Length: 340
Ligand code: LMR
Image (cartoon, rainbow, N blue to C red; front, side, top):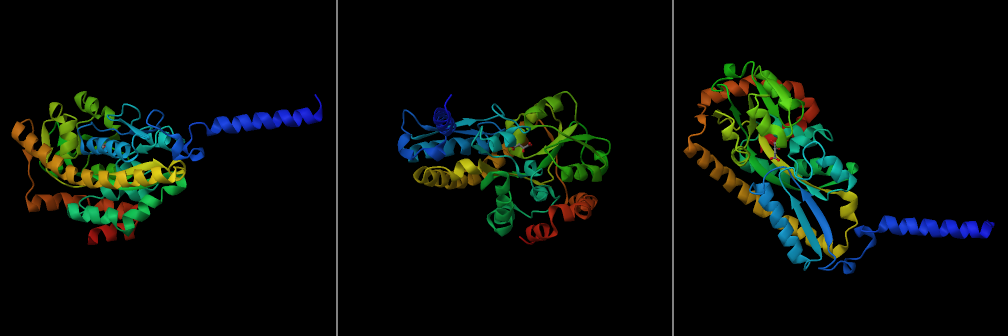
């Protein structure tokens, strides 16, 4: 083949490859190329049910964004780990196989151990201090720390304070000795159970019901709403109202993908996220309360309340978590959260 021909062929091949690579990527298309018939499809994957606050808010976000773009954007929501579970949703986001996920902050420990702030025992005083933390400088800095991992933090969505459940007695600290609890992720939760004399096993959310049913673990810790929507009352007997830690979500998107969105779609995306966030935060409080009332009425759990002195006993026992993890999580972050 002549040299001129070779160069021409190479140019054609390169151009075709570039065109192929650009296919379907929003970065190379203006929003005008999307229509109701040929929309930009966004996948939103999460692990809780469609009825949970996260599930309802994901659906709300989908409706809002579709409405704001006149159908040029279609958001497909996949609840209950249907598409990705705890083990693979973060990789899927980074790879661009899904565009939005909302893992609990704990599950981001592999990227930044400071996200375990939500697991520090008895740290946040109340709901308001949690909101202030995530909407303030400390929370924002944490979220932005994911940018170098090609993830953009969009918002904090709430779930609530955690309580313990188990098939064995859990009324007092001594009861925890020798039991095994399911954890979401990370060393702080492991240390929390170690302080109580219990073992811990990290199990994906989607596999927790079965693990409790089969006795792989004796108990777990979660919000009233997660306990209710996962039907843990079917496989657990005792519930200790401890409010010792938080489950809150960091809504994340793929940064490169997000930065490449056409300006009008990005604007609609941000507006829809802000409205869905407002909706989610109000709903989370209502639904957690509703689940608590429902479970209390159902009589399915032996519910144990703590007196102030009993609560203090748990606080004291878990103090070792602070000395062990102050450096890893960050003293400034812990102190900042304590003050709120
Ligand atoms: C859990 O794994 O228990 C929770 O993080 C699940 C969730 O997303 O609320």
